[in-house]
Length: 360
Image (cartoon, rainbow, N blue to C red):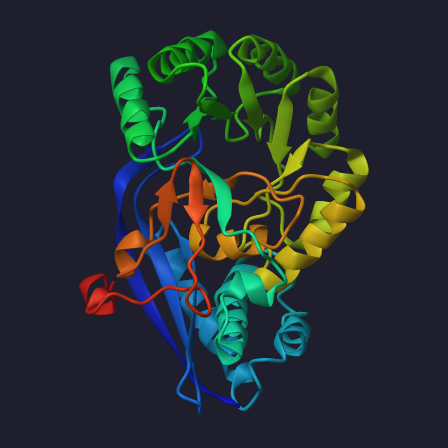
């Protein structure tokens, strides 16, 4: 079986719940959709994105350039194909736009390998979990009023979620504490809550805020300080009894190893596109296993679910609904978990007309 061509489409997917955090204010996910075709009639899917259309257009050009390297190759040789692309990226480097562009191609190639084996991707990766614990992450933004936060949290519970993340990161962190306290009161003690500061605080503030959140039984504090301040994050993790999660802004498994070596967090959360796709995400998971470190995910729920379903030390898949409208069979959340699809590959089908509907 050989790869014959790859179609790259630039889409503007509207967000059902626009984003406002301490770092972002956006209404669309400008998405580069990858459809990798073979001479056996199989098509693998992958995608990457940016919040600005011009940046997504640049990613599409890079993806088209890398896609040419895959033509004529056997998609089942996923790691060999990744190595060819990796070498080609040497000039631009293994971080930033080139890694993001690679991620869609690598994910599509992994799906083709699972499709060829006629098994779900997570089983192709050696996994057997049919449910993966998840948390709702596409709501509870900073621009919500306290009443809106409480109502939204209750809606998430009604939708089957048993865990959810609240955005924090205000200069006056006690305002954040009050907002989280209202969410806790709205959902009760049995719902798991996380908070995400989106790198907003200096180290001293993050520690003080974390101690306040501990009283509200918060599962983790995410990205408390700027992503490159690994030593500062390690000091925060050591100072708090609650978990600290980080890693989503780092590129590649080599960078994730720096977090592990520094004991910068209690949970690492690789971002699929900053890992350059599933291949290096798996490398990071292997490192986490060696360090006895729990591993989570960031965005890209549909593909990341398959990776975490194959990790004994995988915890709390991030559930983002951003790309659900692209598919006629989106993932199902039931009683706090993703029900893993049993169809081959990613178990997804592009909805008829979706590419045309969202074409940028």
